[in-house]
View 1 (spheres, rainbow, N blue to C red):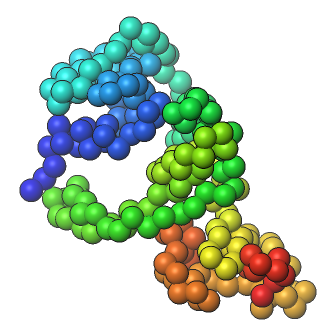
View 2: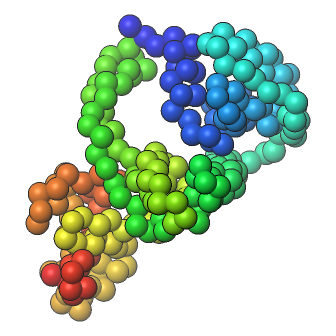
Length: 233
């Protein structure tokens, strides 16, 4: 059975972290989750279609028991941007909002030792696809620890990427090894210098420990070194 708009909106909002950004595709609207069952409309494009969508979305969101705060909504002019430019602008907005995320003790999540984030496999969850079919999907989180109160906070992988930056997604630690993704020029240099044996092409499991690897490192060409000795295997 196909997911209804109400079910889709509820699923998105429940998964959204406090201070997280939601931009329904193609509507020109930007919402931020604020408090329990409340979202704040922070911007609306200055077009008739976006104005109409704003009314529809308010009815939809309030219909699932959530509140919409429109008191500080900014009306923005439509910019003639390429898809790449729009994506970059959206990413910058998301990264800026991520800087406001805090631990319960008040410490910004961006001040955590994010490089020590621990990837945790949380099993599988049944997801409803757009065509109405269901599929089992792996669920992962990244556990980060507060340097002030020692609280351990599980974060969505996407949120972790916003906080830690792209470089943090290029390094992955197992119980024994550190994998570092390498680009094509580096691969060529390493092979030319006869150190290509230090490279691996990763699959689903770590070839040494057998640990399940998170999806973002699968298929990556990596160099590797021991966590204990710091020497290349």
